[in-house]
Amino acid sequence: MKLNIAGAGAIGLLLGAGFADAGFDVRMLTRSPEQAALLRQEGITVERSGEKKVFQVEATAAPGEWSNAELTILAMKSYDLAGFLETAGGRLASSPLLFVQNGVAHLTMAESLPNPSSAFASVEHGAMKTGQTAVRHTGTGPLRIAPGKGDGAILRELALADTASFPVRLEEDAFRLLFSKALKNAIINPVTAIFGVRNGEIAESAELGRLAGMLHAELSGAFPDVADGVSLESVFDLCRRTAGNESSMLADIKSGRRTESDAILGGLIEEAARRGCRLPLLSGIAEMTAFLERRESDG
Image (cartoon, rainbow, N blue to C red; front, side, top):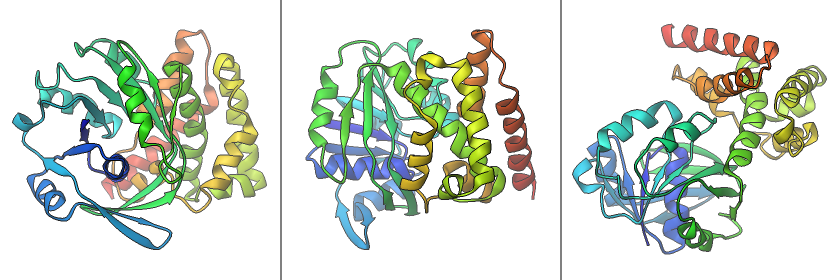
């Protein structure tokens, strides 16, 4: 099965290696020709528990070479998604799409696309990009996939990639999958980013734990249909399992990059408003995150 994986950051590289290891024909779609050339020459190097392994993939940055894949996995940041689809034009119109973005905004975007089918994924792996072709696997968690529109048969083929180090799980409800992940992200990402701490501190610090509890209570009130499966203890458990990790939002702020706050926090705030609910604490947290993002990018 031939897969396009669009986006060669930490998650894109990890997914490319995982599916290549399972025997899929992987083609990485990169932003720069230089990265594509390196991937063709060197493959993807995954470092896991101090050991390194290389996986061979195809790679291209030329949109004319993006067609003829049985599935395209969209693994770029949420704010790069619209631009990529515009660049792709009609070249991917016949390809089923798998969205692997944080947040919930892409649920609406997917409905407007002409592609015959779409699906959504939540990534619970920890990954850190260490070079143009290299990624460090810092934590193992399932790749959870749920169908959106169209035939979901192709997802069963993806599930064949399931291994102990690259677990793949099929889910039934895309809305619940994405909102469950978004609720966890809306607590962990901004708190770690604002206070400059790794994930484990939320579970270890009494003060940050209470703040996490306040956010969880507010989100649970707005999203009771999802929050029943996202307990506060499950948030703390995720923090413990990824204790040494930097959240993506903290890493982005430290590097002066744009964060996914709009997709993660903004998407929840907008959906809550549609439900007639206000999220004053999360809205304040979002403003603090925006200030830090602007200050670091200007500095």
